Figure 1 (tube, rainbow, N blue to C red):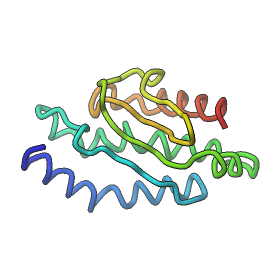
Figure 2 (cartoon, one colour; figure 1 turned 90 degrees about the vertical axis):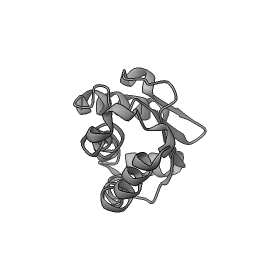
Figure 3 (cartoon, rainbow, N blue to C red; figure 1 turned 30 degrees about the vertical axis):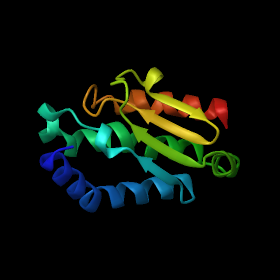
Figure 4 (cartoon, rainbow, N blue to C red; figure 1 turned 135 degrees about the horizontal axis):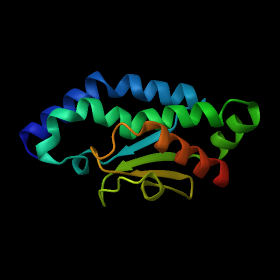
Length: 136
């Protein structure tokens, strides 16, 4: 990562991430660990779009999926017992939600392009709900 990316990451981590993380924890009902591989979440030509696309791609679907899963005591318990950490990365530039999410050994991995199909929050949320409901 170069200086531009480092500056953006620091600003995002300080200004947007704390509130997004708080919303995820509130939705899940417990403090889940995060492993965000920030250095993989860049394509230089799109840096100006990330303030909008990061929340839509990486965080809003988690918030909405956790709200759905944890809407009752059974869901809250299943999520708290099974989910150990959330890993966010971009190793393969996936943009199809069916390929971008996995859940194994308590780790929910989000491996998605930081820019492609950013506005398809509902598609990512539905895919994530289905994945979690089938694996909790």
